[in-house]
Image (tube, one colour):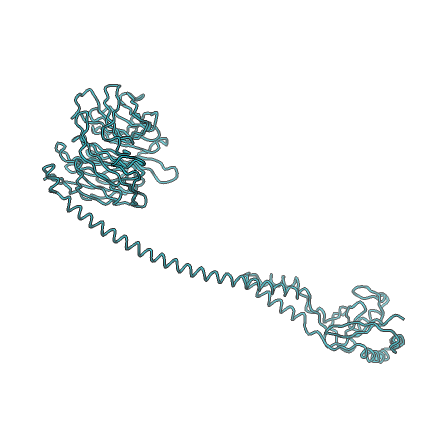
Length: 621
């Protein structure tokens, strides 16, 4: 006989033990009796079942039951997953949550009902829970009927393993439950994930606290720096006002030093006339007779279109004169002194153009071999124009010849000619000789042109001091003022080998330079004086000698002091300061020009964003 199995619960689980018939129990007789009683009638079958239950009770004892239900496993897993979703900040709809839970949790009826009738089994009676040798669970009455059916052929309904009624074993337990292994694994996974997220959250919380602390410290430092800057600005402004007051007191009308040298005191009664807002101001000139200004502007935007704008001094109305796209940046601009309504300008597009102030049309346009950096009208002839080029050449044009220049002259060097003036005939020995004064980085050069011939010569005492960056000329008094900045590496005693830089604003840096005053006498120039000045370290600044008329006895030299951002008016012979004006804009001074208009002198200061106007109506004492 094959060994029989014995069921017992050990350590909370069910174990099956094998034993032989020698233990004194005759299971074959019991099983045959069961079959006979089942065939007779239902009443005898019940008695036999009671006897079998008593025999089985001696072999199978249920000492414990599993108390962990699938529902408890499901609730625990749901609680863990909710904590994970709360920590991760993941928002989902209830529908998606149910779909996710349904993907892994067991059905609620699984493990508590018979798979044949789908009714809940019991722990006693006809529908008592029982198992087959394959391990599948059914209600006793259902599996008994199943095995009796011929079509079932004595097989398990689930796995089709062959078995008989005698193989059915009742299970005596208060409740049958099974732990969902997948759910348990998911719980462990979610617990681990939750712990990881909690650790990361704690780490980020700690870092956030450190960042907030650092932010508070930086805000405190910024507040302290702002207070310090405000204090320094107030201190600087106070010192600057005191300096201005002292300067005004020192150089007032009737100053003894000025009177001793000139016999009269200069007029320093310039006052603010007003301001005009502009966009991209670069260079300008004033027509006192027509009371208009002609400005060269660079419009903002990609590529920056260059235009000429005509502004009325009375109404402030602006008319834009559009230029060809090939014009590019305008380097110099001058209105004709012959009151013929013309203006000349040179642009980096290698063009020298003459336009009409009345019609705004281009009268002439010359193609040049190099870009012009400066231009000037002949003060004696309304037909002649001069241009200084980037390659150091000087060209003479006659507007009656439209094909090209009347004559061209090579310079001493190939340095750009950034300023050119036509000298008056007051001190010229011969009217057949035309005299020009040009300025480049090497200094001032005088040109004596006779017809188509001319050769420049360097003006003494102007070639060695440093880099010449500007020059201004007064045709009524023959005063010349040249501005220099130091030449790096120069061994000259008057020039610092390393220029001292001074921060003067958002867009400007000043350097210690100087001005040199000269007086023209015939073909020669006499040096009068020199003075230190703070000049721009990069740009080529514009200066001007303001003439008040009356035979050329009253002049003031106008320049920008970069260290203080002020316009300074000085005597061109002694550089005695007459008056100071603070610039209305923080942008660098682009140009300074003047004109005598109906009995008063108008001085204009152009920056990138505005035109500042000064007016003087008083005369000399």
